[in-house]
Length: 224
Length: 198
Image (cartoon, rainbow over all chains, first blue to last red; front, top):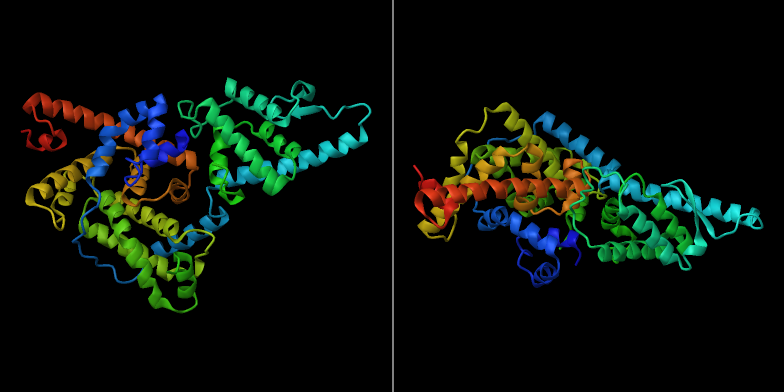
């Protein structure tokens, strides 16, 4: 269980006292602190489960036209969002597409310029710089270098990318490993293509990449 | 057992009676959400009825690519916001919640629970709407974060941030109430003790 999943458990009355969460809290100081901070509020919600039956009387008998319009518009919006949070799913697909295009370009350029431009050079689109792949003998080392770079800072954080949130570096690394492995298995066909995804993750933070992974379950259950 | 999506497809195909099954499945959660949001049981029943009727009337626009629950909570969220806008500020109307009966509980349990409910309703009313609604969708409706995000048209992380910030504010307020009640009466159960404070 990572810290993101721990937050899910913490805010789910049925799982708040689960052994899995307890195990995570035992080894994660930040989540313990968060749990202690939120406890008075969580206890309030816990006390109210299960909620009593309502005893009110509904007077509405036909659908109000403006509410029907809301229903139609909501259906349209949900459909256009592809039944996933719009920003993130779009992000996944956009970066996956970018990765494919990038990989294809790299492949083409590599085949054309092989004599002059060694295949060991990759361009980081975030920093707009060329990375010497020779420094990173394996793909996973290269991916982790991208990860380190994003983690070091510099990445702008939006509201949805809180610096205080919660994964340990090891968990971040593991999650990205999993994401790329899955992308490799399902979508991209090679590590080189999957790896392009990591430098593509800008200007969002790595944290957002992981959230993207979280909702990318259609890619496969092993992502998170 | 048929899934929500399968039921809706059958409803769309003309077996409209199957919509009852969807109502049975989702009405309790919808009522919990609306009850907390509107702090008035009649208004809550009305809002839920309105949302379900609208979902039925607009059934042809439903698509199984999104969850029925996400859709109906999105509708209800809008209905509740509209109700709240129409009304005066809640004042002490949250007290109505305290009188909902809880089956099988002792009178004391009912009293304690109703006081907690009233306290929570008041604290939620003090939060920014988006945080209060996110908390209601999480705790009263039991929606997963991806559905909350869809219903509120936010990112998943944004939904989690709203829930976390809302909880932080609630916890801080609850702790202050705890302290105040403890100072006044030296009671240990202070969400409830607070109510006996003059």
